[in-house]
Image 1 (spheres, rainbow, N blue to C red):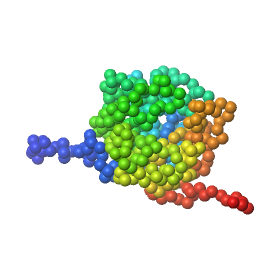
Image 2: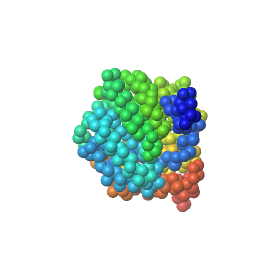
Image 3: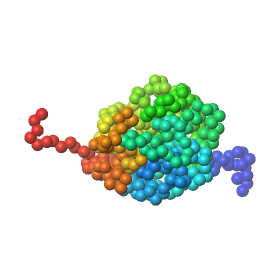
Image 4: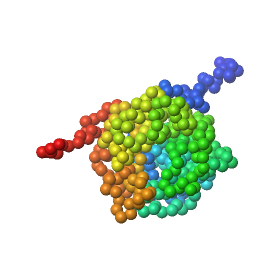
Length: 394
């Protein structure tokens, strides 16, 4: 007892009782801490997940349309495919509408994911597609158009500084409520922050978006970190730049590199482009997770890219899981040329039909084989060898 009292008197009790990361609870993890965390995780393999019956994040999570039974069924398919994570988008308006109910539904989702051995990466904000999100019933899909109902968060609200306290409370409450939850893999604080939006939303896109994001993104990292999460923070690089030299990056990218505990990035290019990305990023000495890839028509495929990532021990999360209301089997250019007569012969994203049938069984076989292999090991059955046509000339 006297030693405990002495420790209190000397201000040492908190140090004695502190967890391993207490020293850096409100600071970025060191490379060594990030590597130690990554070594304890299953190889991150998964998809960006939206249930097939939801057109966007709002429809996925709102009380009237949240569908645990459907999520349970679809995450079962993910488990059978060897997946260990899912990247899942949240939304600030859901918290503003009903913070307690939203967090309860997040907990329900986590229970379902945990049942299937999946630790999600939660995304707090997003700058893609519709910048004017609205709660309530969501519009139906535009026929033949890729991701026609997806909404940004916070969208146009980022231009209104009076909204910042609300956004701060959202981040601190969500991250703080689940800061010690071992069922969560990581927090992706902002998806493609300075993306100009895409689609046909230019007239309503936030003006001076990059400047607003450059101001907000460091604050979002700070808000999330102030909740002392035991999970790492990240925000994925996505521009077609050389990422190896921080001095040549814009302000948003510099924040992403300098504030992320683990480095995440997006790449939808050919395998040789993907290899180049890895070389650019490995110099930072932190674990790497590619949180978006696979655009079959662009040359980014499971056959071509995933074995490379497995050998390099880079986590991989493809875009699109089940074909549904998001219609991300359609390519990006469907915004200019909707596929209204018939779907594309080659799916752009997505792995499963809505009934659970794989779009291409070979892809699921590769996922499962690589997931079950030791870290850094690529089994022979995960390599797709192009067949030569008998008797072919040149």
